[in-house]
Image (cartoon, rainbow, N blue to C red; front, top):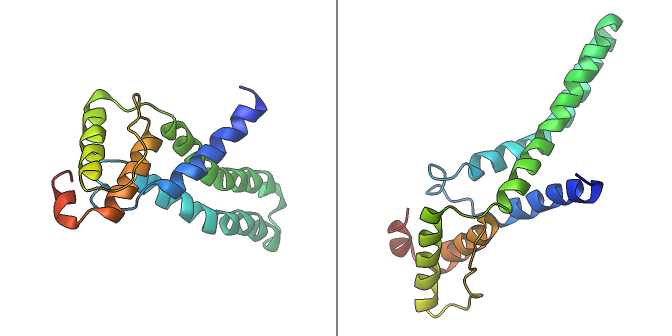
Length: 149
């Protein structure tokens, strides 16, 4: 895989994370909510854990374990990147047939309400579903959403 595609996957993961609706109704259906929470947690706390892991070895003069501490720190720093990689891959994945029908049903319902929306994709991806669900969560009332969740 070229370096450009490698970095693009992380950017796609960030973009997908920003567009996925965080609704508690979606949590049992899709793993995205859990992955996004874990990735955001990793952004905040994994650098601190990485520094602490190495620093504690230096404080206690345990120099022979510093290589292990560095490897542990690198692993901790990689966890948010793993979340972004997964989200980037997921965003570009085409929906399975069962979700395509659901996607089209939600799209039609939003259009019936007279809400401006881009045309439905022929082969929708999870990113297209994320954008549609975000629009549905913002625009439709709670009663209409219960039908799908």
